Length: 382
Image 1 (cartoon, one colour):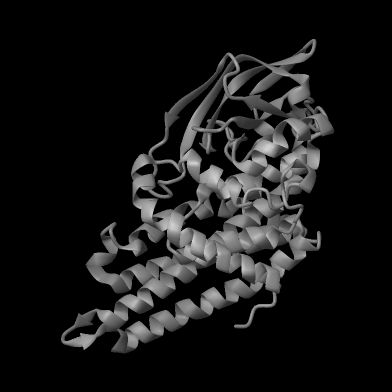
Image 2 (tube, helix red, strand yellow):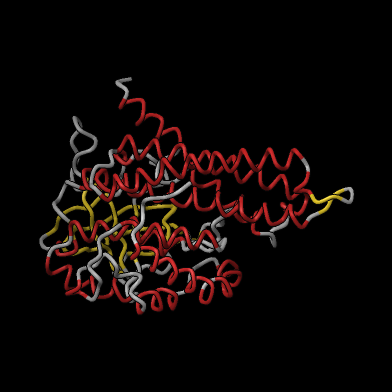
């Protein structure tokens, strides 16, 4: 179906990104998967080309184009090539918005040039071993001591934590028994601060090019000058950015489902069974027609949500609806596509196997499907 989301500028950027991914990502992707991390020089290269600084104001080395649709194009073109740019996506879509919204002028001068040129890599540390989606249950503490906060606690499932120079940590600075959401604060922990250690890199079944680590903080002295926004206001900040974070997951889900469909169509045209191309079987046609229809429906829903986000109107409930629907469509689409590959679909040298493994996490991170249903139900007055 015809899409009305993008302008000519976005489409020019798409051509640029498509060429960039083909030349500088695809040839190295298998090695990056084996290493379990995107290399720093990829960020440096993307920074030099202006990709990382699109939304950063011009006075700090960026382009000043605060338009989420450029992020969408980047994700779509990576998926089109059957690769992912997980930690790049996290930095641009999930973490950078906190810096843009809440960094003061001194922090902008310190950090924005490095964020724009790829010299500073970031991570955000929300999840704890016992909290999961329950952000109000965060137990990592930060106690004010003069011009510092003394930070203690542990975080897990932290994307990009292995190489991060700046880690935005959600910590509890006060406790209100009557309001579990109050008293959370964002602190930026810098690489090398005494007491800040990185634990093991967690082995995952999918998205292997995206490092996921455990972090610990033992009496880490974080300057008050490294606080993002106001003390105790982090829950509201997190809630403000979660719609975009969840929409970002949906963007990847639809793009990867589309990539799975394209790879499967190409495969069944070439593969024969009983002397006949697999594409000629009625079951193949019916399966792919059904997958295509679901993906198109998800795309329409997603595109509308992207425009709502750009206009500043995307609600938490609508973001939850989009994430729920698009990730569930992705799961069904990739599973049905893999089935048409037969045994070869289970072999990791075929992109469909990677797409299948990568798809499983989308119904879990940025809020599980069950949490999305809770949010949607609340919006219905239930």
